[in-house]
Length: 438
Image (cartoon, rainbow, N blue to C red; front, top):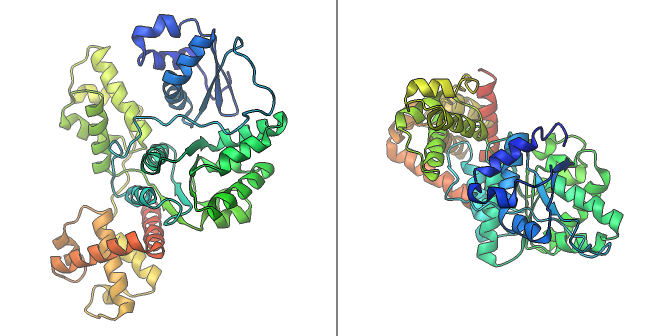
């Protein structure tokens, strides 16, 4: 084990909760796993145990490893007593197990992720044509992997095709392994014959020239065959260091969608959904309190929720605000200031080169009315303002005018890739400008 996975006992403790009745027979005698280059390697004691681990437990171990490392981890089960495959045979691309918990029904949509979620839903109905590639980026723990896995499962269900979902580390490791074992042809067939290729954490390609070369040709083969490509990273393509220009260019061909930290309302909705899925009866007052004071990513929110339940179930503490305060100690941070209509109008004016008096005035030329409609749409997307309140900010306009603008831009976003990219760029600038003032 290395520093990225500090505790085998801790990892087993996480899995124990999922398989308590079978703990002694299947897990207690496992030797400590090894962890290298993003892959957790578990050694089974016999072929039957290996089959059970592969068929039933890969996702539990992957979730446990992610909880400890904060990164997507490939899980491989090996067994010394299983017959070895000859070198080069079947040395393809390792498919990460798709979590049954990562569905669109369980993905909470809010202003911070609405564009990315809508784009993912769009590619399900038209894979390989509408947004190809789809590039989703955002900080760690904001739901990128959830969204990519939900999309992968939905594409498979809708098309009946074979979708390959991998971490970039797995892609690189399998590529190197294929070269070493003489299995490069099998690797390429796996990657290039898939109905869709979904790669998480693509920033791992940085400084890996051979892997970038391989992905370049894989990308071209899939794109020309009109196969869907979905990528994720912690930053947009242009900001990934040491990434070849030709890959940066291709990653920008489709739609680049950003996921931002959830606002307070979305954080509370996430907590409510997670509590409901786990059968935990937690009063809304307490969930509101956690959502108000834990303003980081979804993974941290989940950690705070788990801490609360451990205080109640193990520490025998009452379910009240005082226990919630104790539970979130160490998770608290100053919540980001909310986006305002003024923030949005300032960015819209700067982007389109119009003056604020014109934006809120009565001029109806296309050069003014279109930015005005975009501004109204963004106010409805990024703030809790009502139709009437948005109209008030835009020169006292009637709520029907705001509703018309909202529906008009929403329709363009769904149908026109250029409008979707425009709105996404404005959202990015608005969020960045807000952060700069915090």
